[in-house]
Length: 452
Image 1: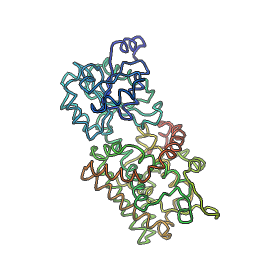
Image 2: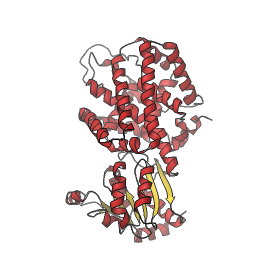
Image 3: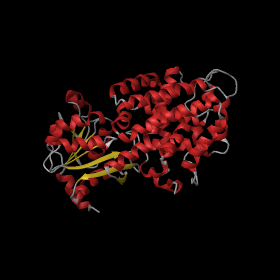
Image 4: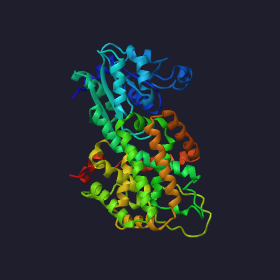
């Protein structure tokens, strides 16, 4: 353990650099500088004058570009989009301080570390990081991955850890390969589900939280969570999800499998093949939840509490309509087909992933709910049109990822984002409350659920 005296010496003599002042870069710059570290930051050079005025009262120093950051910083963290990591490191990596340390915050370390190996001098150490939460979530207690890729000295690695200590996160030590596989396992399929959900609603021009005679079918606890999470994803920046999906090779097969699961399950719905649907869903349930014990991550009170429903224009009482829940059935089916046990990686789970897992737990483990869902999927056509649009959306996202086209991904994402934009402030307020509640379940507390 590093002594307090040593940390004080480092704070007096070392400089931390942040290249990229997006949401997470700003979070790091703020946390580090408030903890007493000298922090030097930059963003796009064209934004310098604007940002200089905007952050005039902050404790960190803003400089013109990454050369001025790199040449003085003992630990430089690149907080840029995965799409641009190679380009930005090629520009500023050669200016890195002699025997300094570099790292990045991208969600895919394959491309990031390749960029460092290619563009920074051989004397520079590589210690990468990934905070597994968004900028609006309190970092305390959340998983923080550290990757000691090229750093032989324990003292230098201890220095990097001391910088990150002010986040009060739970450090998880992984290799680049382990990180990319785990992030794909815990995020690729679930992101695809909720991206597709929002895409389907936008295509159908449905705001499911606005109740009325034709929209009451979206009323209910599970629907509350679906809406909150889908809106939360679309309120973020597109590159957060594009980076994981497109640059992480492990994610490609998973997103393709999700589209395939959606298609095949929907085909069973249309054919009214109840027996085959039961058999397939049962196998998926046994694989994922066979050894589940103890509490569920979500309960009825929590599901019902965080509602977006507004503008009820009818005096009729509202009744929850059985839903096919194709999006959730396909998540568990995909995990089964891919051989992924989601509980294996709970120590690296994001708050959103714990919600994703929680809604699937609720559907599959609440007595009678799964059986009701299968009946609705086969015999009730209330959601048939919505499910068809959902399948199209899932296949669309899969195609965009397979072509590795960031431009199309961005245009598609922002088109849907614009449709939902008026609801983001309220959705984020409710979503933040929901995530705070979910976060009371620490990742390691769920290890008892893991399959043997």
